[in-house]
Image 1 (spheres, rainbow, N blue to C red):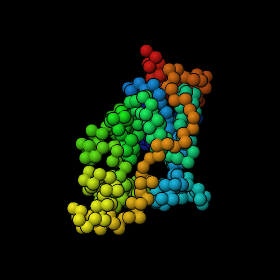
Image 2 (tube, rainbow, N blue to C red):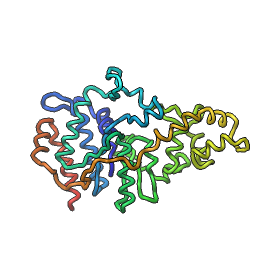
Image 3 (spheres, helix red, strand yellow):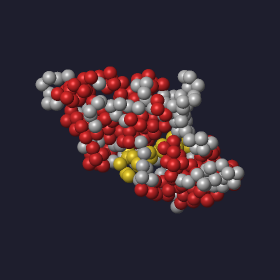
Image 4 (cartoon, rainbow, N blue to C red):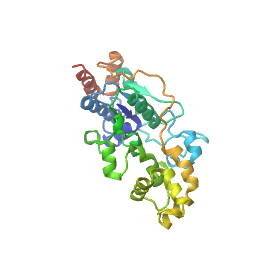
Length: 308
C-alpha cells in the first residue's frame, strides 16, 4: 500500500474539527485524522508493505517548465521570488512535522524523491512492487490523475478517499471503463485533453470529460487523436479538429505534466510494515505531548492485529 500522505492530512484537516487540540492548545486535528486513516486502512486491507509518500517538491521545475500555470494558483503570494511555497492553512503547517515524527516512531516508512511530487513516488513504488510479485498494490489518494496507475493485469488499483476513508471507492480498470469508457492505461491522455483547473491545466477548449473519453476510445491515444485532427479524411467534427490543432502547443507539453514519473529516484527506505512500534518511548512521549494517546493506541492495535 502506498499512501498520498499530503492528500490524507489535507483531508483530515478539513474533515476533523480544529477543536481537537494538544494540551498546550495547538490544533492536532490533522494529526488525529491522519493517524486514524492509517489505522483504518491497515486494519481493513492488512498490507505487508506500506509507504507514506511525501512531496520533496510539490511543484517540480520540469512540470513548470512545460506548463508555467501548473499549480501556480497555489503558490503563496508572500513567498520570496523564485521560491514556490505552497499556500497551506496556518494551523496545518505545524502539524505536518508531528505526523512525520509519529510515523518515524511507529516505524512506518516515509518515502520521497528529490525534485519530485508524492504522485511520482506513489507511481514509482507501485511500478516497482507490481513488477516484483508483491501485488496487489493499493494506491490511496483522492487525486483522479493517479487513475493512470490502475492496471488490473498487474493488480494495481486506486483507493479513492474523496468521500472519506470508510467510504472509499475501489477503482479498477473495470470501474474506469464503466465510468469513462477507458481503462487506466489511457487515463493520462484523457486527462491531458480534458484538463484540470485545480492543477492549472487548461485542457483543450470545448472538450470536456465525455468528449475526451470518446476521442481516446475512438483513436486509441493522444497521438492518435492529434493525427486524426491533422487528417482531412478523418471522421472528426470540424469544430473538434480546429480546437485540437489550435491547442498544439499545450498538447505538446501536457503529457510531461500529466503523466506520473514511474522511475523517480526514491530515497531508500524500509517499507515493511511493523507489527509493533519501532521506538515505543518516542511514540509514548509524542502521544503525551500532543494528546494523541487514543489515536496512537488505535494505530498500535492495527499493527498488532496483523501479527495473527
